[in-house]
Image (cartoon, rainbow, N blue to C red; front, side, top):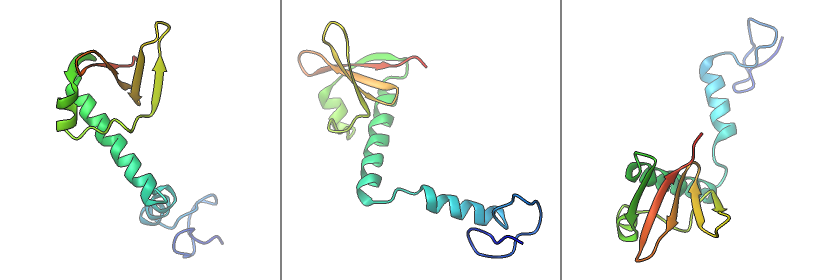
Length: 115
């Protein structure tokens, strides 16, 4: 007999079962997958917020905006997931598949990577 990884109850059913119920399976996986520190949680929240802002401002996959508009929505320029430099030296900052590049006069071009 095996015991549930979450609550320790005896498991009835298939031989390879690890949990006694869906509730225990969910609770166990939520504990295992939660952000382990406040720092990680705060960074992930900022990345998600930045991503949502870029997605909202760039529904068509390519558009332009201003620095002040990004800042007014709460965009934080300190957080991105990757940086891409083109052969011509243009630097794009990406949040997953949403990116931006600085233009002159506080302007920004917003792009979306093809999947």
